[in-house]
Amino acid sequence: MLTTTIGETTPEPQRDAGIASSPLPALGASILYLRPSLRIHLLGALTELGIFVSESANVPAAAITVARISATADLLVLVCDDSPEHRGMIAALPPADAPVVVAIVPPRASQARMLEAGAFTCCDDETSRAALLATLTFAAAHSRRVRMLRDAGAATLFGDIVFQPDPPLLMREGSAIALSRSESRVLTALVAAHGEPVEKRLLNVQGEQFMNPANLKTIVMRLRRKVAKIGGDPVMLSSVRGFGYVLRW
Image 1 (cartoon, one colour):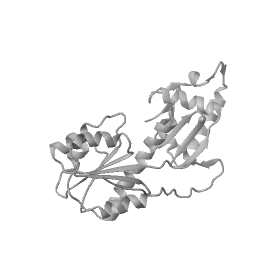
Image 2 (cartoon, rainbow, N blue to C red):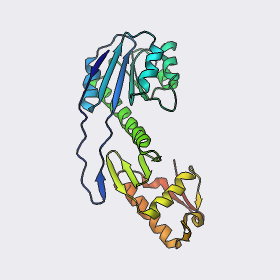
Image 3 (cartoon, rainbow, N blue to C red):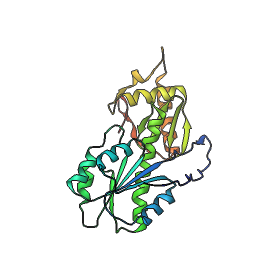
Image 4 (cartoon, rainbow, N blue to C red):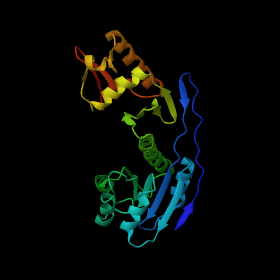
């Protein structure tokens, strides 16, 4: 077992009125070598991303090892092939707590098979350093979103934005913007609808009081502006003419 500790590096966020910086969660990656492969490029890319790395090689009972590693890792990098055995190991990962899986296969292996088995992304040993870094960056960004959701408890994924009801915040890639109580209540109702439109009269309810319809329109406009301010897509919060609003997934 080889273990390498690499310091987490967080880019300095741009300063903007109303936006607070929140630290990006540090990630851990477990690399499991199910076949021989050069380590230098993979470790170099993970070092550049500032990720804590644990490596395992030539370990018997690989399926048990994968299950053990998956409980502690945010990213699981499998240096494997597209054999039924290796695909089965990915498919056997628990869906609720499984890490984001990156499969690194030989050049002539089928990446499509690995993706069908449940890998989040895939590349081959002979890809360029830039392509490998792009693959791992993509996986790490998704893993951070999953981690933020898990750490926030009641948070909900809103496109690539995390909505945290308590305290009410919108968060994206290290930036956070506060929501008012009324904004949070409207967004909570839209999230609870799971992509179905919500009537204005239901969104107008604020506790035991009713809002003026014009106030609801203002609240939705403010929510869209805040979503856009931290780089999200405000179009996801859409109006349904003559009915209400919908949060599109």
